[in-house]
Image 1: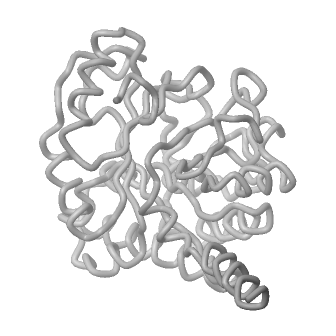
Image 2: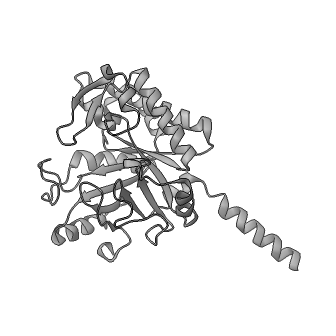
Image 3: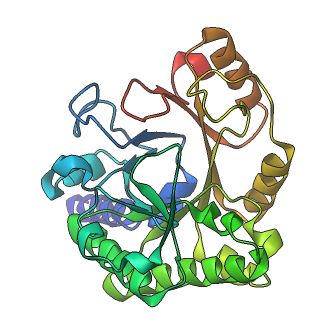
Length: 295
C-alpha cells in the first residue's frame, strides 16, 4: 500500500510538472506589465507574482531588469515570465544601438524619445533581434512580448510590409525553438495584421496570444491617461478572431479615474479578454483582473 501511495504521489508530481507553457498561458487569469522601477512598487518574488498570472518584464531596462535567480522565484510561484522586445522600433537606450547600422533607422517616434522606426525586414536588424531572443532564453524567460508589430502600418505598401512582419515573427519563433522546446510569442497590437497578409496561417501558427492597448479608451495620443470610453470596434472584432483561433487575448488600459476603471471592469466581465489597468509609462501601481475591482 505504501508503495502504491508513493507511486501515485510521484505520478501526480510528474503530471503537474508536465504542464506545457501553452496550457499555462491558456489558464492565465491575470497579467502584469512592468518595464521600469522594479523596486517601486513591484519587486520580483513578491506576493504579486502568483499562479495563473503572466508577467511582461523588460529584461534590461537601465540595467535593472530581472536576473535569472529572480525569474526562477517568479516561475516557482506558477507565474509566466515573458520578456519585452520591440521589433518594429530601435531604442537608443539598448546595448545594440551604438553599433547598429544606422541606415536601418527611420524617423524618431514623437511620443517616445529615443525610439526610431526601423526597417525590420533587413537582415541586420533581424540578427539583432535573434540575439536578443537568445538572451531572453538564457535569462530564463518563457516567451517574448513583441512590441511595435504594428510598425508595418507606417509604410505605404502595407501588404508587402505585413508579409514581411509575419515572416519575421515566424522566424523569431523558429529561432527560439532552436534553443528551447517551448517558447511563447505574444503579439502586441496590430490585431488586423491577418487582414493585410496572405500568410494568415503562418501568423496564427507563430503567435500564442494578442495584447491590446487602448482598445476601450482611445483618444488623443498626447493624453497619457483617462481617455474617454471609445471602444475600437476594428480591434475588438479582430480580437474575436484570435479567440476563435484559441489564442489568449490581453488588454491594458491607462486609467486613473475610478469611474472609468469601473466602466472598464464592467466591459471586461462580458468577454474572455484578460484586463489590466496601468499608467502609460508602466512604472506605477497596477490593478489586476483578480482584484476586487474586476469581481
